[in-house]
Image 1 (cartoon, rainbow, N blue to C red):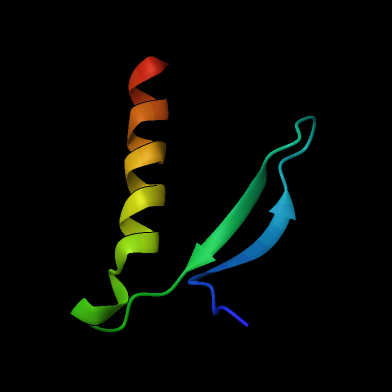
Image 2: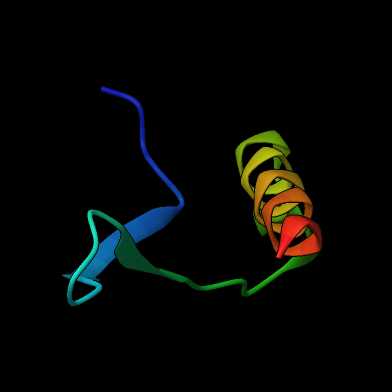
Length: 48
């Protein structure tokens, strides 16, 4: 079973989106999965 860095918190009202929690305790926590999602979020924010 693959461990995930993110924990789903709650659905954003009126959307199909969810808020997620990410805890970074060390530099190693900033792994490839985290970097991928941060890049997607950054790109999505630039479109707004």
